Image (cartoon, rainbow, N blue to C red; front, top):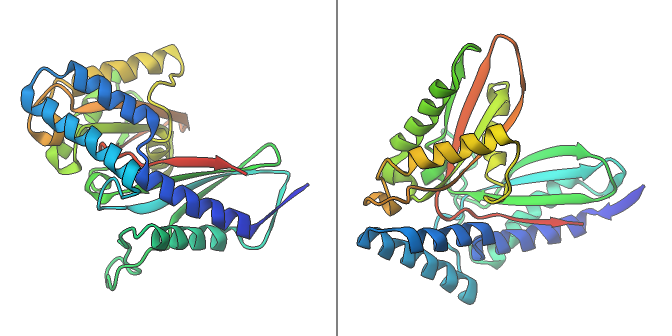
Length: 277
């Protein structure tokens, strides 16, 4: 049994909050640069260039990539042979608070969803998964709400065709339009229960855009990306061939009587960082 202190987890989460907000992840930056080279429309190309430049300034100056520094989602892969010395959830919450204060990042969270109140840094959303091993992997995803607000869920009949599912996904992106700050990364969750499909869709955003899975879903992701980029929404909704940078699909077994499908969209500032301890 390996013992890991809550203080170590707190410090790691603090560092990850800073890294996620200051450094656009490599695969997204690579996709933006590729889109910039291939984008034929002048205005769209200029916007992509500005997004790439913004990411460079954020990295160099240690500034937030976007002013909406989001609601922090923390995915924890907790090794079954790990013992936490201290309170895991408290350590994560304190780590987020410390990171956001240290980085002068915007406090965007209200403590009561109806009464609202003065914004704060916490609490984060925490997902914990027990996995084999004696390590903890922390994944930090600050999620802005311009794009989070465009989340959609549909409970399909189990007899629904792949074409019907594709239409729902494309329409979800179309309805997001310029409000979610394209170009997007589109996360899709298929299967499980309603809540689990939504979790899968968000988890899909964590996967590298260039890491593909089985042939069926790789083809489906590619086909959806092609259809989405024909919508002509373009960078910042002003037209162009680059409406999305990628589509990632995650799946899980589901009940014989149902077929949940969820779509979770990220703006071009897909902020994410991870660390194993």
